[in-house]
Length: 184
Image (cartoon, rainbow, N blue to C red; front, side, top):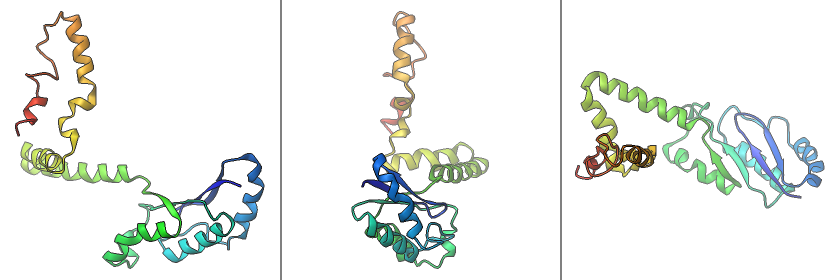
């Protein structure tokens, strides 16, 4: 009987079956959980441990999934910095080996965009250089040289072929803006 158990703290507990013959046991396992253990309004290791132990009692080798929901106000739940730092490893010890932060991209993009907009408003282009380019370089983020991500070499090749090798507006190559990052 093979299944993947998904416990979404912001939503429902679900079982995703790998073989059709094993579906018959799913409702029994879910029904055996105490009411309320399939969801939580807060991140809580005791609740996660209870869910984990009850499920792993039926499916001892299965990995569990935990949604580290951004809907929780993580700062308002009494975690010490150490407890918050270790939360994901504590979950893993309980069998929650697939963990995700739903909408992490949305929140990180919104935060960075708001910071960039404020910096640009106050410092003009210096705000962009400080907030984006210098940080990308400092952390080794290869998007600093974004031309490689945009397919510009491919397009330059097509345009060069059409223009018989004479292309003054190439995005890549010795005279490109991308090469200016190599010396900075």
